[in-house]
Amino acid sequence: MTPEQVSKFSSLPYFPYDPDYRFLLPIEPLKGQEKVTINLQDDGPTLLIPFGQVSFELSGEPVCLTLYWIRAYGGGIFLPFEDSTNGSETYSGGRYLLDTLKGADLGREGDRLVIDFNFAYNPSCAYNSRWHCPLPPPDNQLAVPIPAGEKSFD
Image (cartoon, rainbow, N blue to C red):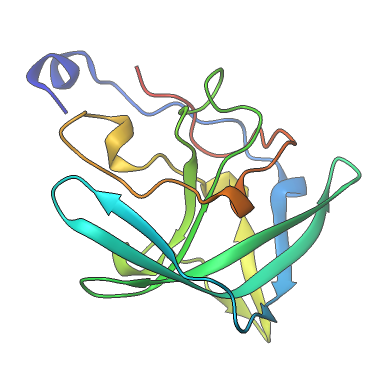
C-alpha cells in the first residue's frame, strides 16, 4: 500500500458471511489440458497447469472452475476466478480463492475440497500498481455474481 493508503486504512470491506457460498466438492481430474502461460512484468512467464476442476450450481446455474498447479517459485494449487461483481463491487481483475503457496487453503473434508467464496480475496495488485498478479484464465471467468468474500479496496 502507498503511504496515503496506509494513513486512511481502517479495515478491508467484505460481504456478510453467507453459508450458501460454501461447498464441499470432489475434484474431477483433468488430463491433457493445455498449459496456460501468464507473463508477469517482473517475474516473466508463469506456467499454470490445469489438473482438476470442481463443478456446482450458483443461483440455479451450473458452474465449473479449473484448479491449477503453479509451476513457478514454490508451486501450489491456485484457484483464481472472475464473476459478474468484478468492476462494480469487487476488484475488476478478479479474486483468488485458493493459493496454497501463500497459505490460502481451507483444506478438505474427507475426499472433498472446501470451496468457500466467503474467503475469496483480492490479489496483491488490487492494492498497488507496483504488484503484478496472475489473473483468472478464461475458463474461470463466470457470468454469475458471487457476492461473497472481499470487496473492492479503494
